[in-house]
Image (cartoon, helix red, strand yellow):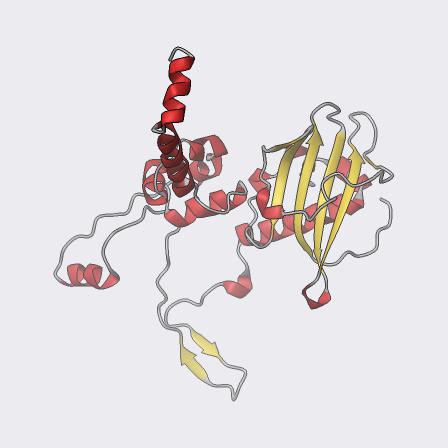
Length: 273
């Protein structure tokens, strides 16, 4: 593997594949510099099937001629002859889903990535972040109820209080916590929340979400049988900054207003509609 100087912390990574020459890969790396500044680097690679991958001599900017907006990109979008195949944005995707990484960009399934460390090092950072969250970070695990916590200041000992666990896979439920507590106190059996299986959540594709873009996000989450938090997380994975229901509704209203104008009606009559 070629030697590579350590890069600043990665903030975002967007990868494109050329639709005509599929062996051509372009990537935009956004690094966090000291003082809050950012460095945007555009690179091009050659993914040859029977040879090692190669970083090409940079021939000029394609995507970064103007200010590059990471939040405006999502996997599946087209930009000229380039198709976006992967987006990682630390601002929106602090918990990267490793299943969303294409096989060509998976450091565990594609050993040829080792020949292009300028890309594989950043992909490895994303993998470690996602793997750390999936497996659980021991530093963030809460102690069991009643377990003693020893403070470093004055060696004080206190009891850990019970912390309720929020089920991110459950459907949104109505009613306040106080009402639920009152029901439990009265001996009313609380109905179990309907959980969405983890494998079903992982299989949710952009096409599944698009079926419910015309609905409010709460109704969409019920139809998809996932919790609101899970649905918002899936939106971030697909590069959707806001649920598009309101924008679609606004466009529909605009179209209806245009159709009601005399000019539009006369145009339809002139064309035999």
